[in-house]
Image (cartoon, rainbow, N blue to C red; front, side):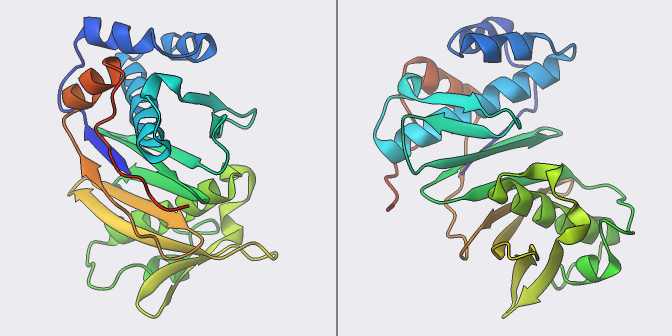
Length: 232
């Protein structure tokens, strides 16, 4: 999993160079955004994900074809078995890749309504020792979102059908209706952002936090800074 924090604007020339490496339909989608921050986050998410897949599969980043299914879910063409997930919020951009289903979500910590989709039981089942009610609620929500991304459905499944619980000191998500259980790893990226990654077994996640300029320049040189070949 790769994380990049955008504390300042991406230089316009660098952003243009990155967008030029993407597939035409992706370029068109990004350039429709009015907010430059949305273009930056979307482009950097693709860079992180392609570079991660390159490191996993022993490829060069530009050889990795990242596409979107009709549902909007990201997927990799031509590398059977690798699953990817993308998230961005606020200043953070996250890309994840694995040889099994994976889902990742990042959210800005803020007041979240507790009700039908996010119940008091979901919130109470979050990590122990967390006293901030807003963070506990966001933790529970990111657990649900990462789980639904792992399933590949996103919010096409009602989050109210998903329950957050604890098992043996770990966070698990029960999808009900014969759906597989998800195991969630939580991380507080900073006081304002919460991350969750979900897999079908307990995640063993490797995290890289790199300046976005370093990642982008390696990517533009068709190299990956992520040199880990994980087992299938």
